[in-house]
Length: 298
Ligand code: CAA
Image (cartoon, rainbow, N blue to C red; front, side, top):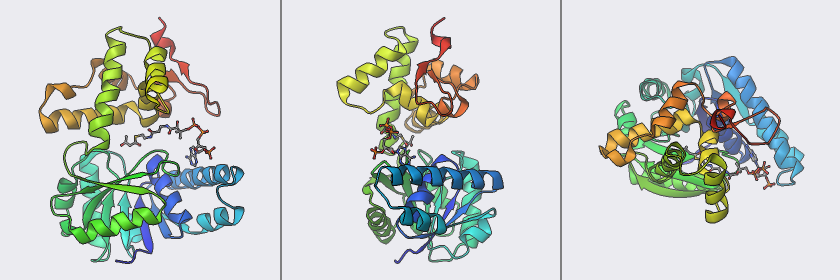
């Protein structure tokens, strides 16, 4: 199936990154968000990230201009998906909200359109069941920061057809990404493996085995990870980490996935990491410094 028009639902961090990549590779992108302010912010972020690529010499000024011209913004789902060949949903990670959005998309998108979700852990099969085209529903899980990370985790729901998977695999390659196909079980592969590691790092801090900097340094220098697990948890968002651990815990019914009480406490206290200005570290806009939160030095 030929994909030309792509609608992206949700203009947050993942949505604007996904719009950026599709537009950079020449697709006509409609970025949809119910909040006009969020759409404006997304375009500013995309422009800033394109500037970064221009200054590194990885794209030209002309590609930057063309990329921005390839993006249209709208504030209603029905209008945004009306002519889409592919819809990629990247709304807030909330199961009820996603099911509602998928019903709206299913009603308004052309019958042949593929409906993908960027969910990090909600069941593709459950989302597909909210539509009348479960064969055309699939997971297309990008990693943050989307313009930089090479992986697309492609997740087959129970009813996803081989044709749908093939289209999304080939499309991911067209975006300069490397797709990996997995089946639809809690956390898929990326988060079934990543999140227990992050949770274990939080447990190690909670149990007093080591401090934040030691845990992150050991995993960075010892294992070659670009970020330590606590730094990465802040980057992903502690609320997202908690919600994925809950999906694993409930989905597999195995106590090894129980979220660490420290993670639960931090989310309850609103310490969500980079997005709230503080998690294991504190963040100052415009500064790249990671400073351990004073909460952990008491
Ligand atoms: N857009 C475009 N380019 C960007 C960018 C963005 N948003 N963010 C960073 N970059 C580019 C920079 O320009 C730079 O380019 P060059 O290599 O050409 O110089 C490069 O990426 C590295 O960036 P920085 O120098 O600013 O910073 P860094 O070297 O510290 O790298 C990082 C930053 C890429 C985020 C790196 O720390 C990293 O890879 N961290 C791990 C990220 C990760 O694990 N992501 C997955 C999270 S899990 C997830 O997303 C899924 C889920 O379901 C939870």
